[in-house]
Image (cartoon, rainbow, N blue to C red; front, side):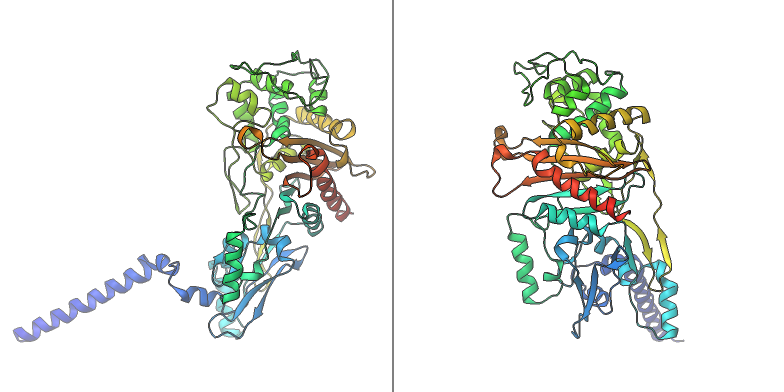
Length: 488
Protein backbone atom coordinates (compact mmCIF):
# COMPACT_ATOMS: atom_id res chain seq x y z
CA UNK A 1 0.00 0.00 0.00
CA UNK A 2 1.44 3.40 -0.96
CA UNK A 3 1.91 6.18 1.53
CA UNK A 4 -1.20 8.35 0.66
CA UNK A 5 -3.53 5.33 0.81
CA UNK A 6 -2.02 4.27 4.14
CA UNK A 7 -2.69 7.72 5.57
CA UNK A 8 -6.30 7.65 4.35
CA UNK A 9 -6.79 4.18 5.87
CA UNK A 10 -5.35 5.26 9.23
CA UNK A 11 -7.52 8.39 9.21
CA UNK A 12 -10.65 6.36 8.43
CA UNK A 13 -9.74 3.88 11.15
CA UNK A 14 -9.40 6.72 13.64
CA UNK A 15 -12.82 8.04 12.59
CA UNK A 16 -14.40 4.60 13.13
CA UNK A 17 -12.66 4.34 16.53
CA UNK A 18 -13.90 7.81 17.51
CA UNK A 19 -17.40 6.84 16.41
CA UNK A 20 -17.30 3.65 18.52
CA UNK A 21 -16.00 5.56 21.57
CA UNK A 22 -18.68 8.26 21.14
CA UNK A 23 -21.40 5.64 20.68
CA UNK A 24 -20.39 3.73 23.81
CA UNK A 25 -20.04 6.99 25.76
CA UNK A 26 -23.62 7.96 24.88
CA UNK A 27 -25.15 4.50 25.32
CA UNK A 28 -23.48 3.50 28.58
CA UNK A 29 -21.83 6.40 30.38
CA UNK A 30 -24.47 9.07 29.71
CA UNK A 31 -27.49 6.79 29.23
CA UNK A 32 -29.17 7.55 32.56
CA UNK A 33 -28.46 11.28 32.24
CA UNK A 34 -29.96 11.48 28.75
CA UNK A 35 -32.94 9.31 29.66
CA UNK A 36 -33.86 11.63 32.50
CA UNK A 37 -33.03 14.88 30.68
CA UNK A 38 -35.90 17.36 30.76
CA UNK A 39 -35.69 17.95 26.98
CA UNK A 40 -35.82 14.24 26.11
CA UNK A 41 -39.49 13.79 25.27
CA UNK A 42 -39.01 10.25 23.95
CA UNK A 43 -39.06 8.81 27.47
CA UNK A 44 -42.33 10.58 28.32
CA UNK A 45 -43.88 9.62 24.98
CA UNK A 46 -42.94 5.96 25.55
CA UNK A 47 -44.25 6.09 29.14
CA UNK A 48 -47.73 7.02 27.91
CA UNK A 49 -47.70 4.92 24.73
CA UNK A 50 -49.50 2.09 26.53
CA UNK A 51 -51.79 1.53 29.49
CA UNK A 52 -50.22 2.26 32.82
CA UNK A 53 -50.66 -0.28 35.62
CA UNK A 54 -52.90 0.57 38.56
CA UNK A 55 -52.65 1.45 42.22
CA UNK A 56 -54.93 -0.89 44.15
CA UNK A 57 -56.89 -0.40 47.40
CA UNK A 58 -59.08 -3.17 48.85
CA UNK A 59 -58.63 -5.16 45.65
CA UNK A 60 -59.95 -2.34 43.43
CA UNK A 61 -58.03 0.15 41.28
CA UNK A 62 -58.11 3.80 42.32
CA UNK A 63 -56.36 4.76 39.09
CA UNK A 64 -56.91 4.08 35.40
CA UNK A 65 -55.81 5.00 31.89
CA UNK A 66 -57.87 6.38 29.02
CA UNK A 67 -56.97 6.13 25.32
CA UNK A 68 -56.84 9.71 24.03
CA UNK A 69 -56.03 8.71 20.41
CA UNK A 70 -53.25 11.28 20.58
CA UNK A 71 -50.38 10.42 18.19
CA UNK A 72 -47.76 11.34 20.80
CA UNK A 73 -49.30 10.64 24.23
CA UNK A 74 -51.76 7.83 23.64
CA UNK A 75 -52.85 7.07 27.21
CA UNK A 76 -53.68 9.60 29.91
CA UNK A 77 -53.86 8.83 33.63
CA UNK A 78 -57.23 8.92 35.39
CA UNK A 79 -58.11 8.76 39.10
CA UNK A 80 -61.09 7.51 41.10
CA UNK A 81 -61.94 9.99 43.88
CA UNK A 82 -58.76 11.83 43.01
CA UNK A 83 -58.75 14.42 45.83
CA UNK A 84 -59.30 11.75 48.48
CA UNK A 85 -56.44 9.56 47.25
CA UNK A 86 -53.99 12.21 45.97
CA UNK A 87 -51.87 12.13 49.18
CA UNK A 88 -51.37 8.39 48.56
CA UNK A 89 -51.04 8.17 44.77
CA UNK A 90 -49.43 11.49 43.96
CA UNK A 91 -49.86 12.31 40.28
CA UNK A 92 -48.65 11.12 36.87
CA UNK A 93 -48.87 13.94 34.34
CA UNK A 94 -47.74 13.97 30.71
CA UNK A 95 -46.60 17.58 31.17
CA UNK A 96 -45.57 17.84 34.82
CA UNK A 97 -44.00 14.51 35.70
CA UNK A 98 -44.93 12.26 38.61
CA UNK A 99 -44.79 12.20 42.41
CA UNK A 100 -45.24 9.79 45.33
CA UNK A 101 -46.23 6.21 44.44
CA UNK A 102 -46.72 7.19 40.80
CA UNK A 103 -43.07 8.27 40.71
CA UNK A 104 -41.42 5.77 43.07
CA UNK A 105 -43.00 2.75 41.37
CA UNK A 106 -43.00 4.21 37.86
CA UNK A 107 -40.98 1.27 36.54
CA UNK A 108 -43.57 -1.26 37.68
CA UNK A 109 -46.51 0.88 36.58
CA UNK A 110 -45.07 1.46 33.10
CA UNK A 111 -43.82 -2.10 32.74
CA UNK A 112 -40.23 -0.89 32.22
CA UNK A 113 -38.82 -2.21 35.49
CA UNK A 114 -35.89 -4.64 35.03
CA UNK A 115 -37.80 -7.17 37.14
CA UNK A 116 -40.42 -7.33 34.39
CA UNK A 117 -37.88 -8.17 31.65
CA UNK A 118 -39.17 -11.75 31.23
CA UNK A 119 -42.77 -10.51 31.00
CA UNK A 120 -41.81 -7.97 28.33
CA UNK A 121 -39.81 -10.53 26.37
CA UNK A 122 -42.65 -13.04 26.45
CA UNK A 123 -45.15 -10.45 25.18
CA UNK A 124 -42.94 -9.89 22.12
CA UNK A 125 -43.57 -13.50 21.09
CA UNK A 126 -47.22 -13.70 22.10
CA UNK A 127 -48.11 -10.39 20.48
CA UNK A 128 -49.81 -9.08 23.61
CA UNK A 129 -49.91 -5.34 24.09
CA UNK A 130 -47.48 -3.97 26.63
CA UNK A 131 -49.09 -2.96 29.93
CA UNK A 132 -47.79 -1.97 33.32
CA UNK A 133 -47.85 -3.89 36.57
CA UNK A 134 -49.87 -2.99 39.66
CA UNK A 135 -49.06 -1.56 43.08
CA UNK A 136 -51.09 -3.16 45.87
CA UNK A 137 -51.34 -0.79 48.83
CA UNK A 138 -51.98 -1.39 52.53
CA UNK A 139 -54.66 1.31 52.61
CA UNK A 140 -58.13 0.71 54.00
CA UNK A 141 -60.76 2.38 51.83
CA UNK A 142 -63.28 2.86 54.63
CA UNK A 143 -60.67 4.42 56.91
CA UNK A 144 -59.46 6.76 54.16
CA UNK A 145 -63.03 7.87 53.44
CA UNK A 146 -63.70 8.51 57.13
CA UNK A 147 -60.49 10.55 57.39
CA UNK A 148 -61.13 12.60 54.25
CA UNK A 149 -64.79 13.28 55.00
CA UNK A 150 -63.99 13.98 58.65
CA UNK A 151 -61.54 16.69 57.64
CA UNK A 152 -64.07 18.10 55.16
CA UNK A 153 -63.37 21.78 54.55
CA UNK A 154 -60.87 21.92 57.41
CA UNK A 155 -57.15 22.29 56.73
CA UNK A 156 -55.30 19.34 58.20
CA UNK A 157 -54.37 15.69 57.87
CA UNK A 158 -54.92 12.20 59.25
CA UNK A 159 -52.65 9.16 59.43
CA UNK A 160 -53.81 5.72 60.59
CA UNK A 161 -51.46 2.78 61.15
CA UNK A 162 -51.89 -0.88 62.06
CA UNK A 163 -49.64 -1.02 65.17
CA UNK A 164 -49.02 -4.76 64.86
CA UNK A 165 -47.63 -4.63 61.30
CA UNK A 166 -46.83 -0.99 60.48
CA UNK A 167 -49.28 -0.97 57.57
CA UNK A 168 -50.56 2.52 56.81
CA UNK A 169 -54.36 2.34 56.69
CA UNK A 170 -55.19 5.97 55.94
CA UNK A 171 -53.20 8.98 54.74
CA UNK A 172 -55.40 12.02 54.16
CA UNK A 173 -54.54 15.68 53.64
CA UNK A 174 -56.81 18.68 53.05
CA UNK A 175 -57.29 20.83 51.12
CA UNK A 176 -56.46 18.43 48.31
CA UNK A 177 -56.48 18.38 44.51
CA UNK A 178 -57.59 16.15 41.63
CA UNK A 179 -54.56 14.66 39.80
CA UNK A 180 -56.80 14.05 36.77
CA UNK A 181 -57.14 17.80 36.22
CA UNK A 182 -53.59 18.15 34.86
CA UNK A 183 -52.81 14.59 33.75
CA UNK A 184 -52.55 15.61 30.06
CA UNK A 185 -50.40 18.17 28.27
CA UNK A 186 -52.93 20.60 26.80
CA UNK A 187 -53.76 24.18 27.75
CA UNK A 188 -56.48 23.19 30.21
CA UNK A 189 -53.98 20.98 32.04
CA UNK A 190 -51.51 23.86 32.23
CA UNK A 191 -54.20 26.20 33.58
CA UNK A 192 -55.23 23.68 36.25
CA UNK A 193 -51.58 23.25 37.27
CA UNK A 194 -50.94 26.98 37.46
CA UNK A 195 -54.07 27.49 39.57
CA UNK A 196 -52.84 24.88 42.06
CA UNK A 197 -49.35 26.41 42.12
CA UNK A 198 -50.79 29.84 42.95
CA UNK A 199 -53.32 28.61 45.52
CA UNK A 200 -52.29 30.06 48.92
CA UNK A 201 -53.83 27.03 50.68
CA UNK A 202 -51.20 24.77 49.06
CA UNK A 203 -53.49 21.86 48.10
CA UNK A 204 -50.57 19.92 46.58
CA UNK A 205 -48.75 19.86 49.93
CA UNK A 206 -49.01 16.45 51.58
CA UNK A 207 -49.51 17.61 55.15
CA UNK A 208 -49.44 14.07 56.53
CA UNK A 209 -45.77 13.49 55.70
CA UNK A 210 -44.25 16.68 54.27
CA UNK A 211 -45.22 19.29 56.87
CA UNK A 212 -44.01 19.55 60.45
CA UNK A 213 -45.96 21.22 63.24
CA UNK A 214 -45.51 21.93 66.93
CA UNK A 215 -47.16 18.87 68.51
CA UNK A 216 -48.32 20.57 71.69
CA UNK A 217 -49.66 18.28 74.38
CA UNK A 218 -49.74 15.09 72.30
CA UNK A 219 -45.95 15.05 72.76
CA UNK A 220 -46.51 14.57 76.50
CA UNK A 221 -46.92 10.87 75.75
CA UNK A 222 -43.23 10.81 74.70
CA UNK A 223 -42.25 12.72 77.86
CA UNK A 224 -44.26 10.31 80.00
CA UNK A 225 -42.49 7.40 78.29
CA UNK A 226 -39.10 9.00 79.01
CA UNK A 227 -40.01 9.57 82.68
CA UNK A 228 -41.06 5.93 83.09
CA UNK A 229 -38.11 4.44 81.21
CA UNK A 230 -35.60 6.54 83.15
CA UNK A 231 -37.13 5.82 86.54
CA UNK A 232 -38.26 9.38 87.24
CA UNK A 233 -41.77 8.00 87.81
CA UNK A 234 -42.36 4.53 89.19
CA UNK A 235 -45.99 4.92 90.27
CA UNK A 236 -48.34 6.69 87.85
CA UNK A 237 -50.79 7.40 90.70
CA UNK A 238 -48.22 8.97 93.04
CA UNK A 239 -47.73 12.72 93.46
CA UNK A 240 -45.01 14.16 91.21
CA UNK A 241 -43.75 16.85 93.60
CA UNK A 242 -44.60 19.60 91.10
CA UNK A 243 -45.03 23.11 92.54
CA UNK A 244 -47.68 25.55 91.37
CA UNK A 245 -46.58 27.81 89.86
CA UNK A 246 -43.64 26.01 88.28
CA UNK A 247 -40.84 28.29 87.07
CA UNK A 248 -39.27 27.43 83.72
CA UNK A 249 -35.56 26.60 84.23
CA UNK A 250 -33.15 29.47 83.44
CA UNK A 251 -36.14 31.83 83.22
CA UNK A 252 -38.12 34.19 85.41
CA UNK A 253 -41.37 33.09 83.78
CA UNK A 254 -43.80 30.57 85.21
CA UNK A 255 -45.21 27.72 83.18
CA UNK A 256 -48.86 28.36 82.34
CA UNK A 257 -51.39 25.63 83.05
CA UNK A 258 -54.73 25.60 81.28
CA UNK A 259 -56.05 23.01 83.72
CA UNK A 260 -56.63 23.21 87.45
CA UNK A 261 -55.32 20.85 90.13
CA UNK A 262 -51.85 20.45 88.63
CA UNK A 263 -49.88 21.03 91.82
CA UNK A 264 -48.25 17.71 92.75
CA UNK A 265 -50.60 15.95 90.31
CA UNK A 266 -49.85 12.30 89.58
CA UNK A 267 -48.58 11.37 86.12
CA UNK A 268 -51.91 9.76 85.30
CA UNK A 269 -53.93 12.80 86.36
CA UNK A 270 -51.50 15.16 84.63
CA UNK A 271 -52.03 13.35 81.32
CA UNK A 272 -55.82 13.27 81.81
CA UNK A 273 -56.10 17.06 82.17
CA UNK A 274 -52.84 17.93 80.36
CA UNK A 275 -50.81 19.72 83.03
CA UNK A 276 -47.98 21.67 81.39
CA UNK A 277 -46.08 22.13 84.64
CA UNK A 278 -45.86 18.42 85.45
CA UNK A 279 -44.48 17.48 82.03
CA UNK A 280 -42.11 20.44 81.82
CA UNK A 281 -40.66 19.43 85.19
CA UNK A 282 -40.43 15.78 84.16
CA UNK A 283 -38.65 16.74 80.95
CA UNK A 284 -36.16 18.72 83.02
CA UNK A 285 -35.77 15.83 85.47
CA UNK A 286 -35.09 13.38 82.64
CA UNK A 287 -32.67 15.83 81.00
CA UNK A 288 -32.17 16.90 77.42
CA UNK A 289 -29.96 14.01 76.30
CA UNK A 290 -32.32 11.32 77.59
CA UNK A 291 -35.30 13.18 76.11
CA UNK A 292 -33.52 13.26 72.75
CA UNK A 293 -32.76 9.55 73.06
CA UNK A 294 -36.42 8.72 73.73
CA UNK A 295 -37.70 10.94 70.91
CA UNK A 296 -35.29 9.30 68.47
CA UNK A 297 -36.40 5.81 69.51
CA UNK A 298 -39.88 6.85 68.40
CA UNK A 299 -38.46 8.08 65.07
CA UNK A 300 -37.64 11.77 65.57
CA UNK A 301 -34.62 13.43 63.89
CA UNK A 302 -34.70 11.01 60.97
CA UNK A 303 -36.50 10.91 57.63
CA UNK A 304 -38.94 8.04 57.19
CA UNK A 305 -39.58 6.23 53.90
CA UNK A 306 -42.96 4.53 53.52
CA UNK A 307 -41.66 4.27 50.71
CA UNK A 308 -42.56 7.91 49.95
CA UNK A 309 -40.19 10.17 51.87
CA UNK A 310 -41.53 11.76 55.04
CA UNK A 311 -39.60 14.74 56.39
CA UNK A 312 -37.81 14.32 59.70
CA UNK A 313 -39.60 15.33 62.87
CA UNK A 314 -37.41 17.38 65.19
CA UNK A 315 -36.36 17.27 68.82
CA UNK A 316 -33.50 19.75 69.29
CA UNK A 317 -30.24 18.15 70.47
CA UNK A 318 -28.56 21.39 71.53
CA UNK A 319 -31.11 23.42 73.51
CA UNK A 320 -30.63 24.57 77.09
CA UNK A 321 -32.61 23.43 80.14
CA UNK A 322 -35.40 25.95 79.58
CA UNK A 323 -35.76 24.94 75.95
CA UNK A 324 -35.87 21.27 76.90
CA UNK A 325 -38.59 21.91 79.49
CA UNK A 326 -40.69 23.75 76.91
CA UNK A 327 -39.99 21.11 74.27
CA UNK A 328 -41.16 18.43 76.70
CA UNK A 329 -44.69 19.83 76.42
CA UNK A 330 -44.46 19.94 72.62
CA UNK A 331 -43.55 23.59 72.18
CA UNK A 332 -40.30 25.56 71.60
CA UNK A 333 -38.30 23.77 68.81
CA UNK A 334 -40.22 20.49 68.83
CA UNK A 335 -41.87 19.85 65.45
CA UNK A 336 -43.44 16.74 64.00
CA UNK A 337 -45.35 15.21 61.13
CA UNK A 338 -48.75 13.56 61.68
CA UNK A 339 -47.11 10.30 60.52
CA UNK A 340 -44.61 10.56 63.37
CA UNK A 341 -47.31 11.08 66.01
CA UNK A 342 -49.27 8.12 64.62
CA UNK A 343 -46.08 6.09 65.10
CA UNK A 344 -45.91 7.20 68.75
CA UNK A 345 -49.49 6.08 69.37
CA UNK A 346 -48.86 2.82 67.49
CA UNK A 347 -45.78 1.95 69.57
CA UNK A 348 -47.68 2.49 72.82
CA UNK A 349 -50.63 0.43 71.57
CA UNK A 350 -48.30 -2.39 70.45
CA UNK A 351 -46.85 -2.84 73.95
CA UNK A 352 -43.74 -0.79 73.23
CA UNK A 353 -42.80 -2.31 69.86
CA UNK A 354 -42.64 0.20 66.98
CA UNK A 355 -43.12 -1.38 63.57
CA UNK A 356 -41.73 0.32 60.48
CA UNK A 357 -44.61 2.08 58.67
CA UNK A 358 -45.26 1.22 55.01
CA UNK A 359 -48.07 1.58 52.49
CA UNK A 360 -47.09 -0.75 49.63
CA UNK A 361 -47.96 -4.37 50.32
CA UNK A 362 -47.11 -5.94 46.95
CA UNK A 363 -45.78 -5.12 43.50
CA UNK A 364 -47.50 -7.24 40.88
CA UNK A 365 -46.47 -8.02 37.30
CA UNK A 366 -48.96 -7.64 34.40
CA UNK A 367 -49.46 -11.42 34.49
CA UNK A 368 -50.43 -11.01 38.21
CA UNK A 369 -47.27 -12.75 39.47
CA UNK A 370 -45.98 -11.15 42.68
CA UNK A 371 -42.75 -9.24 42.05
CA UNK A 372 -42.16 -8.23 45.70
CA UNK A 373 -44.02 -8.69 48.98
CA UNK A 374 -43.38 -6.34 51.91
CA UNK A 375 -42.89 -8.08 55.23
CA UNK A 376 -43.54 -6.29 58.55
CA UNK A 377 -40.31 -5.09 60.15
CA UNK A 378 -39.62 -4.02 63.72
CA UNK A 379 -38.12 -0.53 63.83
CA UNK A 380 -37.37 -0.08 67.54
CA UNK A 381 -38.61 -0.65 71.09
CA UNK A 382 -38.94 2.80 72.65
CA UNK A 383 -40.45 1.49 75.90
CA UNK A 384 -40.73 -1.81 77.73
CA UNK A 385 -43.98 -3.74 77.54
CA UNK A 386 -44.62 -2.95 81.21
CA UNK A 387 -44.22 0.79 80.73
CA UNK A 388 -46.20 0.72 77.48
CA UNK A 389 -49.09 -0.81 79.39
CA UNK A 390 -48.83 1.97 82.00
CA UNK A 391 -49.00 4.49 79.16
CA UNK A 392 -52.06 2.68 77.83
CA UNK A 393 -53.72 2.93 81.24
CA UNK A 394 -53.08 6.68 81.26
CA UNK A 395 -54.19 7.25 77.67
CA UNK A 396 -57.34 5.24 78.23
CA UNK A 397 -58.14 7.40 81.26
CA UNK A 398 -57.78 10.47 79.00
CA UNK A 399 -60.71 9.12 76.97
CA UNK A 400 -62.77 7.77 79.87
CA UNK A 401 -62.17 10.55 82.42
CA UNK A 402 -60.25 13.36 80.72
CA UNK A 403 -60.16 15.62 77.67
CA UNK A 404 -60.53 12.94 74.98
CA UNK A 405 -64.05 11.64 75.63
CA UNK A 406 -65.22 12.35 72.06
CA UNK A 407 -62.83 9.70 70.73
CA UNK A 408 -64.63 6.76 72.38
CA UNK A 409 -65.97 4.36 69.73
CA UNK A 410 -68.49 2.85 72.18
CA UNK A 411 -68.05 -0.67 70.82
CA UNK A 412 -68.18 -3.76 72.99
CA UNK A 413 -64.78 -5.23 73.81
CA UNK A 414 -62.88 -2.19 72.50
CA UNK A 415 -60.77 0.12 74.65
CA UNK A 416 -59.69 3.50 73.30
CA UNK A 417 -56.67 5.43 74.48
CA UNK A 418 -55.86 8.95 73.38
CA UNK A 419 -54.24 12.29 74.02
CA UNK A 420 -55.44 15.75 73.07
CA UNK A 421 -53.21 18.62 72.07
CA UNK A 422 -53.64 22.30 71.28
CA UNK A 423 -50.38 23.63 69.87
CA UNK A 424 -49.58 27.32 69.99
CA UNK A 425 -47.58 28.85 67.13
CA UNK A 426 -46.87 32.06 65.29
CA UNK A 427 -45.26 35.24 66.59
CA UNK A 428 -45.93 35.44 70.33
CA UNK A 429 -48.35 32.49 69.82
CA UNK A 430 -50.94 34.81 68.28
CA UNK A 431 -51.81 32.54 65.33
CA UNK A 432 -54.82 30.26 65.55
CA UNK A 433 -53.65 27.13 67.43
CA UNK A 434 -53.46 23.67 65.90
CA UNK A 435 -55.82 21.01 67.23
CA UNK A 436 -54.20 17.57 67.68
CA UNK A 437 -55.40 14.16 68.72
CA UNK A 438 -53.56 10.83 68.81
CA UNK A 439 -55.27 7.59 69.74
CA UNK A 440 -55.56 3.84 69.36
CA UNK A 441 -58.29 1.22 69.65
CA UNK A 442 -57.50 -2.08 71.33
CA UNK A 443 -59.27 -5.44 71.61
CA UNK A 444 -58.34 -8.74 73.23
CA UNK A 445 -56.39 -9.57 70.04
CA UNK A 446 -54.27 -6.41 70.25
CA UNK A 447 -54.57 -3.04 68.59
CA UNK A 448 -55.65 -2.94 64.92
CA UNK A 449 -55.38 0.84 64.53
CA UNK A 450 -53.60 3.92 65.83
CA UNK A 451 -54.44 7.39 64.54
CA UNK A 452 -53.01 10.90 64.49
CA UNK A 453 -55.16 13.87 63.50
CA UNK A 454 -54.20 17.52 63.15
CA UNK A 455 -56.59 20.32 62.26
CA UNK A 456 -54.62 23.40 61.23
CA UNK A 457 -57.65 25.55 60.66
CA UNK A 458 -61.40 25.14 60.68
CA UNK A 459 -63.50 27.78 58.96
CA UNK A 460 -66.09 29.34 61.25
CA UNK A 461 -64.56 28.02 64.48
CA UNK A 462 -63.77 30.61 67.12
CA UNK A 463 -60.22 30.60 68.51
CA UNK A 464 -61.44 29.73 72.00
CA UNK A 465 -63.31 26.71 70.63
CA UNK A 466 -60.25 25.19 68.96
CA UNK A 467 -59.15 22.07 70.82
CA UNK A 468 -57.88 18.59 70.08
CA UNK A 469 -60.73 17.05 72.01
CA UNK A 470 -63.35 19.10 70.18
CA UNK A 471 -62.12 19.19 66.57
CA UNK A 472 -59.68 16.31 66.09
CA UNK A 473 -60.94 13.55 68.42
CA UNK A 474 -64.24 12.93 66.54
CA UNK A 475 -62.29 12.42 63.29
CA UNK A 476 -59.99 9.90 64.99
CA UNK A 477 -63.03 8.11 66.42
CA UNK A 478 -64.64 7.72 62.98
CA UNK A 479 -61.41 6.42 61.44
CA UNK A 480 -60.97 3.86 64.22
CA UNK A 481 -64.60 2.76 63.84
CA UNK A 482 -64.13 2.29 60.11
CA UNK A 483 -61.13 0.02 60.68
CA UNK A 484 -62.83 -1.98 63.42
CA UNK A 485 -65.96 -2.52 61.32
CA UNK A 486 -63.96 -3.55 58.25
CA UNK A 487 -62.28 -6.27 60.32
CA UNK A 488 -65.68 -7.75 61.17
